[in-house]
Length: 284
Ligand code: SAM
Image 1 (cartoon, rainbow, N blue to C red):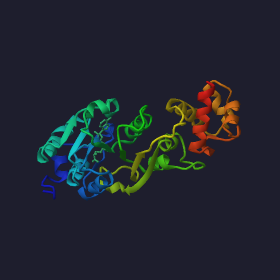
Image 2 (cartoon, helix red, strand yellow):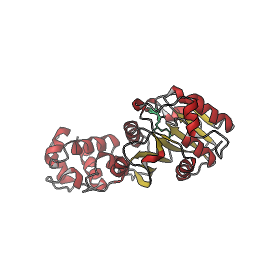
Image 3 (cartoon, protein in one colour):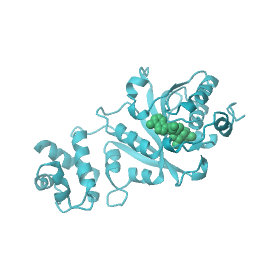
Image 4 (tube, rainbow, N blue to C red):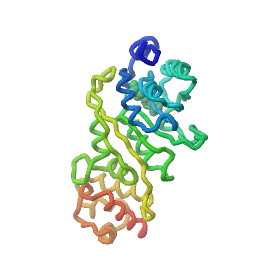
């Protein structure tokens, strides 16, 4: 037994025959000290609701409960994991509600329902492609401040570096602007490959993203997304060329936003992109 009175994760994985499936991007954590460290980073667990995506056999779920989580809403799409997760919930007074769903299709506000005034903190260790798609879904929400107080997510280190990247660096791109435009992302710590079964090819890291209130003159989210995508889709081209795909002459908007038409996407700060999006908004 582990210190939480439940069997070691390796035993759970064997007992429920949870051989990692590549198609679901499965790499499982087994060290409860490590998952408790992630849980401690995730916020005020005792007085909030945790939305956990992709709990798998439950290493992170158990870490969260051991650190005092009172309510966890968990979404896992692998049917094989559900019984193992039910066992954890039963051992913890049914504090975990488990939904067998694809997290990409979930309407989180509807699923979580009445929060009774509690904050929601999101915690997830997901495969790279699903994690990035969910991150974009959450960061481009129409309503801001959004339904979550923080996102504590595991990513491949390279993706984490893209999220926090500064202008004029190789890693700076669409994901950096989308995440930094109305939130503060930071990398908290790395997770070595050996912490997983099976070990992935690269180091992972924990990224935390905290939404902040937007200024009154913030550009419309959809316009910003369009401008940023157009600029980075052809990141080697000058903006006067790459932004033509937006359908109106870029030179006028670039001049109005006080940005050189010969600049390239990676030279623009998040504030530059916001000014540019505001000009497009005015002139479309
Ligand atoms: N959180 C567990 C851990 O840390 O050991 C499992 C991590 S594993 C990298 C990713 C988990 O996400 C798997 O259990 C997988 O089945 C699940 N998953 C993958 N795609 C998903 C999706 N679209 N919706 C919900 N869960 C998903």
